[in-house]
Image (cartoon, rainbow, N blue to C red; front, side, top):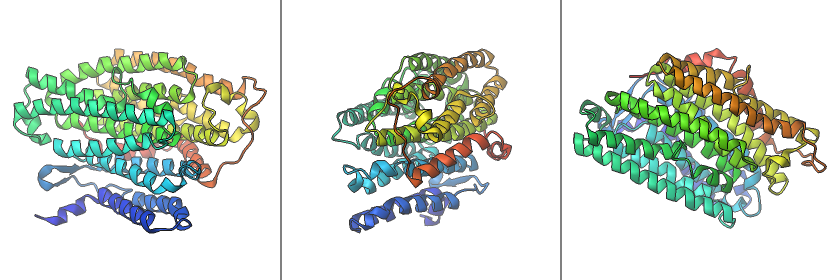
Length: 475
């Protein structure tokens, strides 16, 4: 065996090295030394991002084709690593609580294991490696969701997440078994060359898509989302809503291109109806929510529908727009959940939208960050979310899905209404006892500054979109 092939897995190797260092440090450090876990984790993640910041420009094929990587995949890994770093920074106050400070090492290790699983998912060239990556991402995520195990809602959310993950994995494996039975192989390239859209292969496509749609929270596979988002610790919810969703959406696009390209008509028709259902139903349910975490759960379902607009064309411009959308959505959503986490930790659990009434009077800076993030999520110019929506609409329109884009535009107007409900609460709604004035910690402040800069600058810095576009590939 040529062991030099491991060197092709630079992002995975550097992440494994970080996990080993943190595990050993947490295992053997004393109580005082354990207080340095947060800065150590941030420093190591920052070094990991710098090491893998720029793709090499080479297509990598290792271990007989089981591990594959392209520059675009390397870009997405870097984007998800940046999001993970921001999520870790925002977890500082929560992990310093009396009931969680002794579990910091567990949190960082579990979080990085989920990220490692996502890396394997995206770089898989064989369904076996894909399933291993999927489970490596899903099982530690269930532990993170149930991290506040002595709180009823967290334990319930963990149980719902793991049961949903098991069911979706079972569906997916059932579909993969049909693929193997009809093609005799699990290598992506070989499967693609042997597809003929037979009934069994169409069933394989449906079951595979259903399994991954659970991870992305697409309608009608979304029912776990609101309960899990509400019950999980807020910082875990932030991580789950953007990093996990972004990795699953991108992986679905890559597998559609690499494996199911001969059946493009079938999965485009399937995606057409799923996108309409996801965007419309999620928007209607979001309007009715009072709990802010459930509110953003339905917002994330809607955003997942928009993400799929980049998938439906199966072309290079769709991939570019999707990756750019993932980047912008990640920055905006982390800003939103960063603010929610701060207020939740400082006010002993204020989680309803009405609790944010009058927030502007006592915490104007946090209100500004939340407002900019909401404007970006709604697609209001000149913020980055407007450009990400424009590009993803353009990709679907260029692929011929004009009616779908029109429906998505109508739903964008609906989403503008419910995002502005939160803005209205913060600036206009009266509150005799608003959230008290307080100062957040340095890590969280820095993370929110980075998110705010991203929201403002990503729409202006056209070089980011152009750099992503240089490495896109499609059918």
